[in-house]
Image (tube, rainbow, N blue to C red; front, side, top):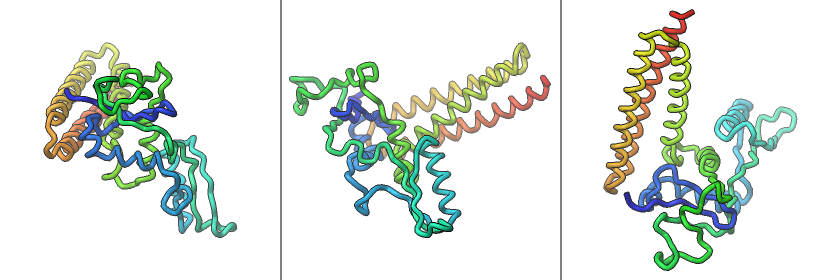
Length: 257
């Protein structure tokens, strides 16, 4: 299995559970480490805060929609217009929650084998891996921090856990459609049979994905590229199941109307 790691802020009692992979080599090789610069920065490249510039009303609208979609509707924004009347040029500055949040704090990459008197770099103030848990007052900031960083970085190939989040959203939608189809089926034997076949296929796809990911995690040569391909194939298989489940749902809703 090997040792697994999390990134821990001792001062704020916050941690990141790396979504790309949790083994040290894979954390170093993947995009998660990019996020540390974002979390620990004192300011952005121009010496101020992060802003998105616009040069037309269309760009302005697109930036606002992007912020609300990717960061969440609860994010506040400051709008600065170069021309106060028309506001066709200027910049939008969202009130980011995680940019520079860890600046100046004690941060460690903590392994689950680490323990006092055994691990060379372990210090008395470090928590044990198993103690870093919400029930002990620790806060897992992974999802929110990753979404904010990905909004900032923009480029898909540099985003953290991009496959993780895409997979998560598709799986949620499949579960929702399956639940609706189950309610629609009622006692309809044919409908329940179709749902059973889809559920079985989903289980097989999930099992194959898990086995392939675990097999690649045991090696390091070309692991990143191969794992990315496995995840893309898994997403494609999930999307195929989701499409057919939606088709079945529409069909049986019409039959039972």
